[in-house]
Image 1 (cartoon, protein in one colour):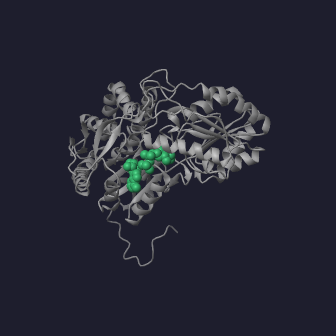
Image 2 (image 1 turned 180 degrees about the vertical axis):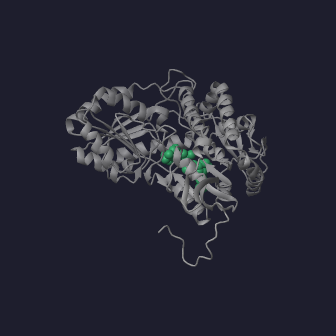
Image 3 (image 1 turned 60 degrees about the vertical axis):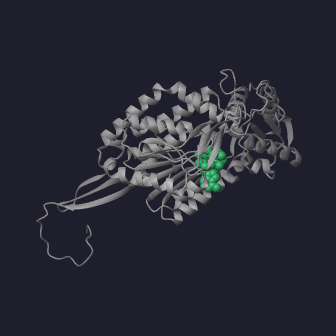
Length: 498
Ligand code: NAD
């Protein structure tokens, strides 16, 4: 059986802890590889390798660092197809969707290619007599990223590309469920000219993460995953003096106003609700039609579309979505559908018993649609992360604004309407971090920032865009007097500009 180890000091090495996790083929349910779980000593070896490499990398001028990123872009693009297939074979998303996962990561690498410009500081000439004032952005040192299973290419790239471009060394702890693509990305970065040790990949579980969280050398931690773990990582990392940003669970609503183009809204809900089997942080899991008439039309249009979703093996180019990542996750999602029925929601499309011929042991699930879901139900309050869409009927626009605003998660939200006033009012008032107007998956492009609010985001700065440069650098401000020979005698009061 194939064994996946770690990537330390510029090369792949076997794990030595004797502890392993299973990497499944979600299409068949079979174990296709074993992934090593790092011991604290192996994590420490990665940290030591990063700490040794970082000073010379930070001293490499930003243009040269950018050239490594440009070359990396080219190398990943050369392997697009094989990487997408590899990703799909461990995650279960379709190959076409896996290409999007890689592409969205590469767009942040493209952003990081602008690092010479992004690191420019500020300069005030003659801020006082013979005094210049300026600011510098300096790397933090060794930083780490802990990433989830659902975007095994995109989220690691969102983390390591800006961090490395800023002059840091990076330790990545990818998801143990689909680790092969992050390992290959590390090899490609070395092939692109990154010095050994600047990016290390440690595979593992809580033991590896806890070692990173408490290691004094690690200056900052970026995390993406579920909220309970996000909160734990935020609290533990901060308690150990690190800069920490954590992005957690989600419950994204889509408001459908009575004046919306209903066919467009239905297309959007089908794609955003069921694409990637609902295992996306920007998946829409709650539809909020405004008014009974809108709700009746919407549900009647959704039912046949959910019933006719094409579910297939992840390699099938005709499939709308493939299997879920693991049997355990499939069981969890199905148990939420059971719960919804018990709570009194109306299950108008039931995909629980879907079986794919020839793939009976795969983690496949048909699309489910609930109507008459209420805010007090657990299926509304909690994240399900599967192909399950809940319709919550709002009596008016005010209730529709209130629902996502009062929900404990606040990652993304969308409104479908033809009315500019309503759209503008909604975008301004809704208490959620990312908003789409007639756009169901409002993932900002790489030169803006990505991040949710409330229990979807812990920490002050977002991912990618200008915030990523702020997160991975510290600002130094310099006050310099030239000519240095100006003599004013000893000053005993604080200098001011009076
Ligand atoms: P997860 O929380 O189970 O795992 C995320 C990472 O944390 C993995 O690397 C995992 O190994 C590690 N981990 C797991 N348990 C741990 C523990 N007890 N202590 C320390 N580390 C631990 O998340 P997942 O199932 O891989 O990913 C799905 C979740 O990620 C969903 O909740 C989804 O909403 C969320 N997500 C959020 C965003 C966002 O931007 N807000 C983006 C993508 C995914």
